Picture 1 (tube, one colour):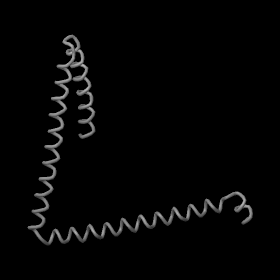
Picture 2 (picture 1 turned 60 degrees about the horizontal axis):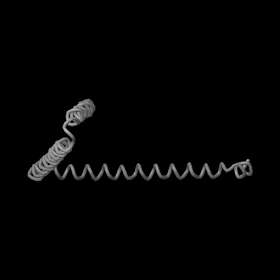
Picture 3 (picture 1 turned 90 degrees about the vertical axis):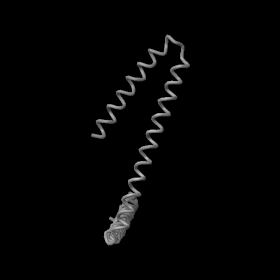
Picture 4 (picture 1 turned 90 degrees about the horizontal axis):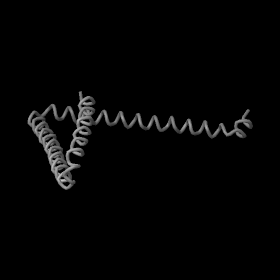
Length: 116
């Protein structure tokens, strides 16, 4: 039986399975350590209301800045699109503009469906 395993290569498969299990154990241990650290950090934050308020304020500022960044990108995209349309010949502006509106409506609809 051992010779048969050696010849068929199943020992290699068994070793790979064993190593995969070891990787799984290591990953699980890392997750446990992360959970403990998160718990410790949460308890320290909960103990200090001033620190908790400061973190909450910082997170609020962070999300506001991200929202402003997205808004700025949208405005820049809109301006670039308007410029691109103005560069087109007059007879193509309307057709391309309608195609863009249709495209954006579809994309925006899909995005809203995913968000809701």
